[in-house]
Length: 268
Image (cartoon, rainbow, N blue to C red; front, side):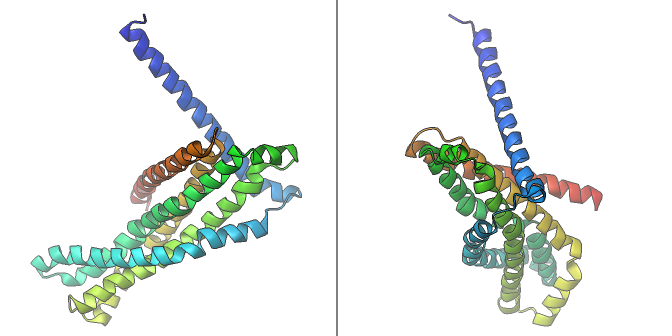
């Protein structure tokens, strides 16, 4: 019977080896994806444009209604919460500053990424996982078709383009939500609110959010594809991997958000 120390260090070693294996597989997937995305078009193997456009419609255009509604509500909620504190010191006009900077730098990109992770990232994992379970991935390989080029690259292009675009929409509608509440419930003059927002926002605030959104799009795609390729079994495994992709995507989105926020704070 193994001792407590043997059990502890044995379990620790197995988990470490499993983690290192996972890091190696993710690194290999990232390397292969960016090879087919950036290098192969210059070697006579172009990107599948029709599939990319289809993914853009599914991941981007079809996400606009839910992103718009949630961003509007978030803008209103943020204006209400900031007004609750600022009216105590007679500084209601600074609601515009708080809403503008918070949405463009943080809430716009991160809420959009979480919505897309739940909507499109899970769909990526389920699609690839179902193909893996049905041995369609093996069929692609046997026909000489690289599954990463065929399946992952169009999804990467879609999210790399659409997440920043959706973030811009979320920013605009979130700002409008704050404006709507401020000019009605808070009785701030529309011109004063607009002028305060313009004075508060800088180009780097919007650019910061867009850079984050681009990174989030890459993260969501890679995580969804990785979990899909890891499927081994039937429908139950597909469901488990799909759930894992959403959880991992949201976790990594927040980690990368912290990283970029600290980076922009210290270097801008």
